[in-house]
Image (cartoon, rainbow, N blue to C red; front, top):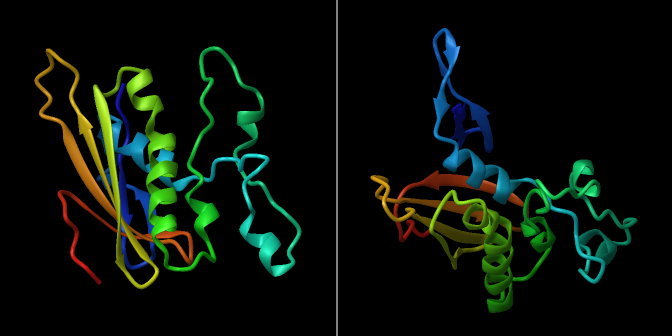
Length: 172
């Protein structure tokens, strides 16, 4: 059964369901899985420095409440820790952490047999911007040629600002 298709609305800065009148459009679910994995907030680890604490706001570890109930069928937490980059300065370590967080968020795709391998590349793409390229390599013996997406991510505001295919992205 196909997942509902998500598309990025760059004017509003949100992902939205795609309508193909009169129904909702479906897709094979891989892009939907990537979007949800990257842009929903995974609960912070106990030793993660929380961005809010730096400005005197009570700590919020975020995350999805359903992750509290880890099961054998779904042992992986949902989302990514990209939100932890909020309020970070432009430094190489931020790019490295973004790549680590994105890889962590997408690792389940290979464990669940959705892709043979997921390659993640993050680069600094301008003031406050990271380009995160995701390449999903197909499983052996399938006709799938693999997929590739890039996301421009404003890490200061913890929000995607553009989505496209291929790499490298245009520099802002």
